[in-house]
Image (cartoon, rainbow, N blue to C red; front, side, top):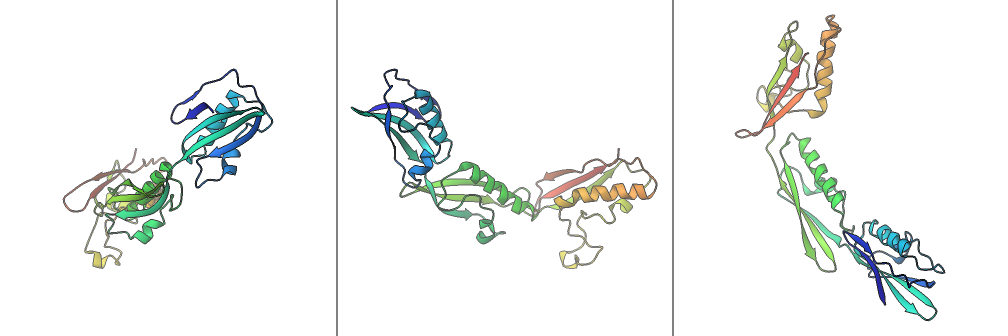
Length: 266
């Protein structure tokens, strides 16, 4: 049996000029969770065709691009009536369990909804990164903007792995300062009135009252607040008022994280 080529991170093809026999069979070896049909669906070499090193090169790359395999190699078993083309593959591990550590503010059940990769899936690091972004987004929705998430893989029997997401929760951020710069004709208090984002005022127990504010940064409302400032200028006849995009700086403080939120009128 002759080995034609292998694809891991770098692909090399060793062409063999003497190979000109007809392919009488194509086999797949090493597949445990993926079926032969999945592999052959991207293979351009066909039974009845002559062996073509360039085509086999493309076949190996196509199989590897499926994303299920660590390595893919091609071998030839020469017989008196023709050649048997064999693709040997080594599968990536599958996911057994997914666990979370360090999460106190958000339950495992809720974090499960962020998963892009799930048990029984083939390990895919891109989906893991997408899951991390979703988890961070879920914490951001709770004003915990400095939460960080990492992960580790633990080997399990049967070519499987467990994924553990490690969550380091930040404290809830509040708006420390809200600065409006460049306003000459409308007071800051007038411009701030009606905005969704406010500096914290009063105890949380009284936040149902309109003049008490939690100070929670509402990222999704920043653009609406900018438009409200523009509308106030327009209502007073300032048609050329230009309000810049809001700038937000997040600073770790003593206790809760604080935010600086500024508007600028050019």
